[in-house]
Length: 178
Image (cartoon, rainbow, N blue to C red):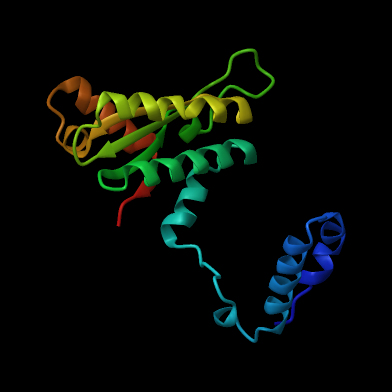
């Protein structure tokens, strides 16, 4: 392929001290440069529409915050693959009106996790605990809330109905199981 891939990484390659890693990086660059099309590049993953939608939904977050949310989303998918149905970003992070980084007040990043069945309290606690290292990394608390898909889409009372409508109105769907 006609690329300038190798040239853009020359400086970075000089910093790699691990010979095995350096050889693998050089081989990957060579593979890309020799390919006639993207289809000839092994292990190249194309972004799915959902992945593009997820990145677009996180547009109001800075790069570090986005990385933290994506890392947490990956953890959720790994640990809850059997039951996780949807994940919604909502609140100020979805609306784009979070407190700025320099402010003494910091907005959190609200996530609504919709599951097939109720999430056991032990798992909820464990998943909340997984947010603390991410807080140290990005400076914003990721605040997951747990509901079943039925509780969200067939609310039992006005308060739950209002919450559901608010999330669907202002929120951004960042994950939907296939």
